[in-house]
Every structure is written in C-alpha cells, then in structure tokens.
Image 1 (tube, rainbow, N blue to C red):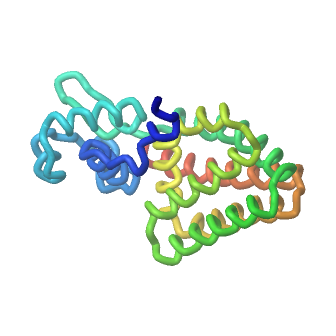
Image 2 (cartoon, rainbow, N blue to C red; image 1 turned 120 degrees about the vertical axis):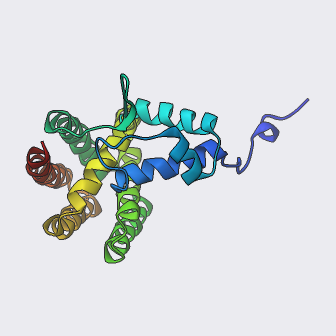
Length: 225
C-alpha cells in the first residue's frame, strides 16, 4: 500500500503558462501596459516567446482577476481603473484588514513578530531599490502573515480574489513620492502595534494607512477620469 506522504509532489515545476501569466500580470501592475491598452495576441506571443494558446489562457486568467476586459470588436484591453471600483476595494480592505490586525496583535508570538519584521525590512529594501513590483509583493506577504496569524483564513480568501487589483492600486499610489515614505511609516506602525500586542492600536493603524491610501488613489484616479 502506498503511504499518503509518498503521493505528495515536492517542488512542482512552474509551467510555461504560469511564467507567462506572472510576466503579463507584473507588466500591468507596474504600468508597462497601461489602462485601456489593447493586448494583441500576436504581439504577446512574440514578446513572451510562447504559443497563442498560452497567451489565450493568460488572457482568460487575467480577465478573471479583473486586470483585463474583453471589449466587443476590440478584444482584450487592460482594464480601466475607476474610483468607483477602487473605493469598493478599499472599503472591503478596511473592514477585513482592521479585524485581522486586531486579532493578529492578540495572538502574535515572538516567531510571528520576527517574520513580520523581516517582511517589513523587505518592503524597506524594495523601496530603497525603487522596485515597485518587489514592494508590492513584499507588502502582500506582510498582509498574508497578518491574516494567517489572526486565523482569518476565509477573509484572506476574499482578499486573494482582489489581490491583483489591490496590487495595481498599490503600485499606482507608490508612484507618488509623498506616498512612498508615508506608506512605509504607516505599515511600520501596524507592525509596532502587533509587536506590542496592542489590538486597538493595530486596528487604528490599519484604518489610518488605508484611508490615506484611498484618499491618494481617489485623487489620482479622479484626475485620470
């Protein structure tokens, strides 16, 4: 009889589709492909060095993530960010992340705090290198740990469905110098409240961080619209 552990696939190889998906997703988040840009299959196959079938899969996945829209007679375009949609995303984040930070601050162990500190330093390093993609990914890892420590698994599933759009909004606001410093300082305050096991302060720190980010996003997107 085969034991259960022997069925586990260790270090599953990354598929060509996953590599292409990640490349196009990052290109949209970083603004290489801008809102409203047409995504032409033939050009993408040449740029990525993959088949059209792979490109079509990538487009389907990114449409499901809300990064791409399919327009009649025009085909796929980079989805246009509107404040109406962004406001809903920020409202959901405020509701879920406040409670996650509150419970994380209650439950965080020294090991949890050490992991969050390491992730915070990764955000700082990415900021010094002016690497928006690394900054976005490091921020996402920080929040994933907060939700995990808080044991808010269902809430994290909801956030994950929005993560591509959240990342796009993060990259949008990070492009503004006044946000880069303030954003890291806000996240540092979230960490400090968790490190001191202070749930009310952690909850308030998340609220302050996200309301500031939402205000800047509103300003940027309103100008674009």
